[in-house]
Length: 524
Image (cartoon, rainbow, N blue to C red; front, side, top):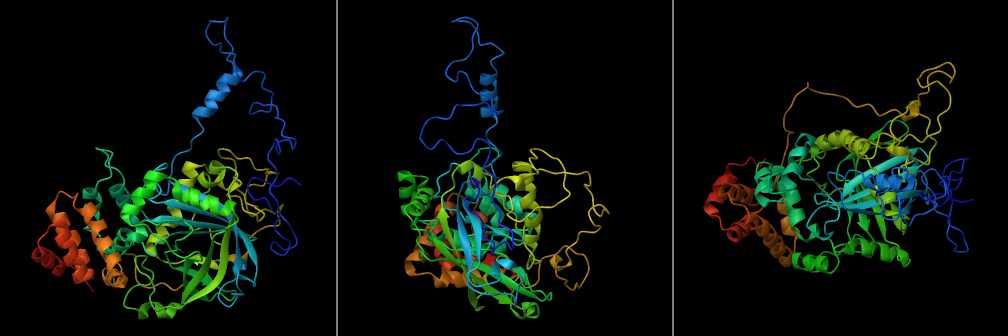
């Protein structure tokens, strides 16, 4: 049997119950085995008589309008790009599998964790967040770490970054943040004046900025960096009991980072060097792996901490991390566009037993991510091979651009006597949660904007601290407004006095002004 370009394996019956699934070979099949050329065809399958010369009126005459092959070829070429992602545009992906270490049914009914050695196929896409497609991979930036699990209960997308926290805690500020980081609408240049102007008013960004401007902001290899779900999620067992959880991927290749100078040198040598490193390692059979660790917390313990554990600008220090499985990348995609570019992730794409938490940033992503894919790829993006679930899809959705499904029958509504009435699955319902208070728009309690940033700074070696100050100063010295620099340095001073003092000297602002600005901050 010819297997698909999407997933060239059959999922064992033990994984998908009694049914084994494959993806059908696309029309045209595989190339002839003997190496002879398959005759070229039009998109409609018709043979092409001449792909070397346009049809003209005489040897020197104009090209004729009846040259269908030429017109189709040019029109198709004009439309072969889809809109670039607003964020995470520069990416690279690979196929692999996830193997569970044991039965987690005490905490979750998610079948991906149902038994020891249970295997689930995955697709992992790495990316830079801010910079556009085609930009150097070595630029300072968070790295996306998005994993699509093809489970028997449908797809689970664990969409995170290589850094454990984020810049902001509320999705209402996400467009503002991205606008500040993207090129100026006037100069078309990325300008530190703009993004530090924004971040100087967003004190919770101090922790993430410390990560990004450290050497962790310039990983030397995608294989040698960790990944994080960043947000808190919920595990839910068969009885409906909820456990809050953070998902953390730990590289089994160790960690390797560039200094700013090393990143620049690597970029000059090959600005796609991280992709090359990943693909070459897989092709040589040196399959990169990550262990998935989970940190768990009972709902009644959330308020016992001196910060809000649902705040995505925070890590969970002191909470045990339990290893629950291993992900291995073992196959390079057959076509970059069909897989890496068309791969579409959404944090709300969860399976029974895994749910989003009340994290305000995550709540916004539940809408934004699938909505951008519907715009970028189309409303039927989940029909594409890289996104298509291995589980049977039985929905009542209809039509839409590029619908290549095989829907039969005229009952496109529910419930219907014809289809057995209501088709709900009670066991797949979301968990219940108590509500307190009224509808409001206000900052969370226990912001604690600076403490963890200070703890991170203290954890760095002397060289790492020096690199951090140098990297921050490199961009902050491009800021023209002294008031922005003072306000920004005050955030780092509030995190750690040594941190702020060194940075104040490096960017040429008066320490007394920084101290005054820091005293005005709410550091609770």
